Image (cartoon, rainbow, N blue to C red; front, side):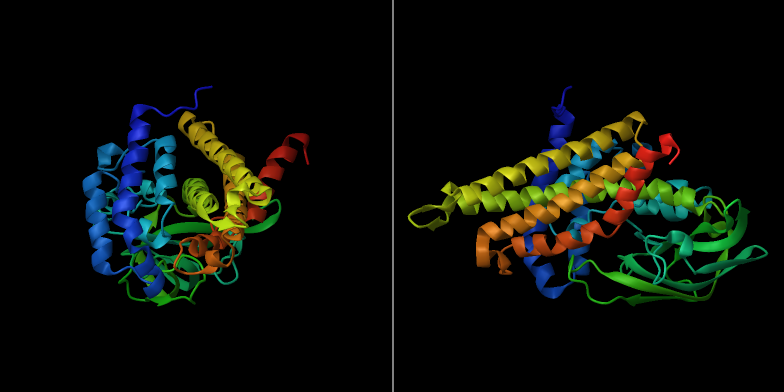
Length: 386
């Protein structure tokens, strides 16, 4: 098994690392202090990412995107994960669900998103429907060639600066052997559509500057041409996004963990106590060894899932394993790194405090750890009829 990088992949890593160091890291403290990324800074990062060929890397080259395969995209995301989520998100990756655009939708939504002219956000979660998306209450009632939407979405990342929303709403009910089941349809909704109100959500402890919002739909009318994919087949659209997003979360956790380890190694090699550097104490050196081992294990799971995705053999449990282990690994690594720093690690002057704080949400969004364990265990038991 050859685990080495090709020249092209190594170039992607080097280019992404240089971009992060030059264009993103210098603004981390500002974002943490102000809880926002200035619009002019977003535009600056976007333009430089476009010039560097790092914008929309997940989209096909024939449409103007980077055309990266899953492994190359994973390596890029790993480097972006080393910095503030709010900053690296300005190096925008249009949601994969936009690949379902057809006809006029391609010119109106997909291509502008690839060119950096428009930004999307996804609205799935609701106050009463998080992991159980079938419990969503937002209704899209069809009236001829129009849908009338009513309901509330929350935890919608980036909706405050997005230009349009990919909305998932209940569009009908079907009878199944297990009883009635809600049918879900995906819609493209311009943010200035009458009947849609965007509100900032409560302040979060994680990812300052990257806000989540509430979307309130009140008799919001959408033409039938705004349906993304097919009516009642919204979960088909969603599944194309969920697997990719879980891999993104996992690989970015690896990048953050690598940065935490680098900080801990430097501190352990230079901080002196009792007449020697603290790295000489077994209590510290063994922590470093465990951290490095866990990071490597997580990265291998991530790269295996990406490789299988490129081969067309990836299963839901491959992405679930990568996200489960990488997110929980990040929690352990940042906590151990902070322990090595002692009280200094909790000070806002160091990035470690942010890495430790931001790590908590990774086990929740894009499918909780419990959901990932359910996916994995179901895959193990299903062949035995259980």
